[in-house]
Image (cartoon, one colour):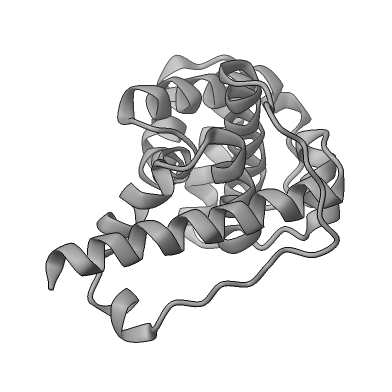
Length: 184
């Protein structure tokens, strides 16, 4: 066992005993990666921080249930934070429209257009999507979930998940095209 693994085991053990310093260490250790995750699902840093803190509250509340043999602590925390993001989206905006389509329409952009954009520009555009559409896009494209898994997580049908992905792609194509024209 490496010293890093021993350190994380020690932190987890402290968290299981409600040690505030251990909780702070765990929070600091995963802050950056989990905050980045929350920023993908929210419109601004204030909301992302709210979701992050809610997620870590759930982590600390349920830390006794964590079992190293089932998942790495990073993976366990990540699942909790993703679920907190989805809970936030459900609270902040109910799904207004739940149209279904048989399959999401794939819309591709020329690679040279995307390659000229920074990661921050792309994230800024994704953040402009409606919350449910943004969540489906993030779960499908960035997290690698399939439509059935997204449907279970978000309590929607797989067809609605496909519709949201299709809408995200259409809207992102339109936004990227408009931005590309402005930069010419």
